[in-house]
Length: 229
Image (tube, rainbow, N blue to C red; front, side, top):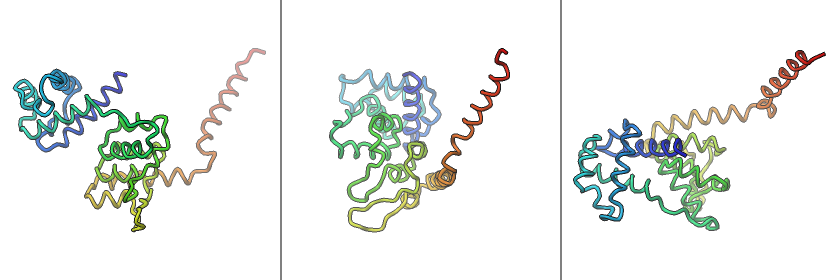
């Protein structure tokens, strides 16, 4: 559980590092973000969540960690509170709420949470927004969430999946959405994912099992050679 918790903290630091004035978070060590999370958590129930960023000990801790501006500190504290006290997932039977939550996680780049929600619910991979018909890949592209794009592709969601607008308007790819929102890194990442996807589709059906078969044959030969007479 600890490696997964550490990975979640690293993703949190990365998200905070995208906040204007909080760029220092991108280089935080696990010890640094853990200490800041503990400091924020210590005030839960003591003062209103919105006032935590104003406390002198929080101000000093964040200044020491490279975040001096109030606005950046406030946004960072909110991100930490969301990490510490996540909203309860919707009920399993509420398909619409589950789909909406999965798409929200994809747009927010919340990889750990998206993985947990998808576990046991593979149908969520085909979730679509109600109006534009965007998939999780579209929302990750919109936000420039590169790790999320990679993970969604690994789960089997095509980087070329088309939107399905409810009004019948023109369909768009995740790359087109990334270009619209000027997410150049996402455009590049999607191009690479498309190449990999096309390569895998072009492989013969038995190509993936060939190395394993060859290895098994080699092992069988070796065992035969060393078997007692």
